[in-house]
Length: 74
Image 1 (cartoon, rainbow, N blue to C red):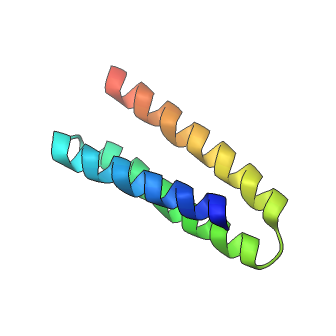
Image 2 (cartoon, helix red, strand yellow):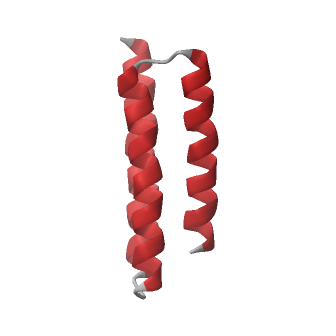
């Protein structure tokens, strides 16, 4: 739960920075999705699915960061 909460706080900071930079709505949406993903991981952890939650968190963040990098290149 702690790692999910830290990830949620980090994504909130990145989301605020993205909004300040005037980024595209799609990029902001990706970080919003990562924020929601962190909440889902916290819920999985509460239900005893910690390993699954960590796998989902890592895979989800890799996908979000890769998609953001790819979208900035377009």
